[in-house]
Length: 239
Image 1: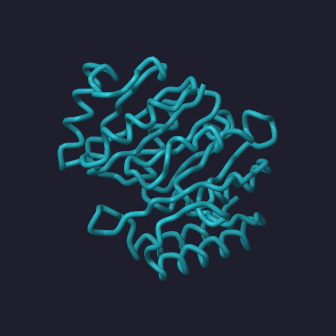
Image 2: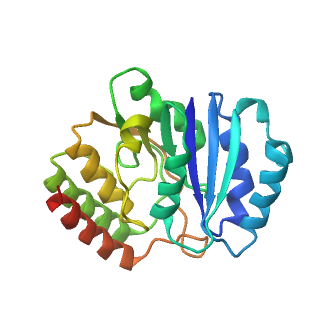
């Protein structure tokens, strides 16, 4: 079974459609949705679904999902904190991170988890930079992403092309053995350093990417870039 951990913060416009697309993926799965104290109506949508289950999601086919669990953070703590809570609740064989926007296509989840299910990998990253369709957006974001990935590779010994990708899949036993400390987007370099240190077999698969602008709701900013630098340094030295 696949556990999909979905952190949510102010994603009212895309949340229900994203959940419909996730539910439509024809794999045994559980949906663990963690609301990070949204203020735009996302919390109310999730409260309704928590009461009614996936039957309350118009146009969905709940038969494709084993269960839905909705968790609510009482204060806004960040993506890393939401993931930490969701990972602790996961019971599937494989855990996948799925953002609540529509930048990543849930139809590609079978491709993402394939190397783990085939017994080749412990961790799989979905790379936006190895040959799939992507929306052309911010040049400096791409430069910063490349720089952070390069620094992460230099300290972890891996040769990833996209350390900052949302789409990551893990064997649950491995993931739950790792203590997640970062509360925000520093999660990405932290988990990369820690799976490398654990000697995990890491694969990449190509994924498509339908990025959005800040006007459309993108949240990561320059402060998160500096935190990522700090996290790369911190977790490369920490043992």
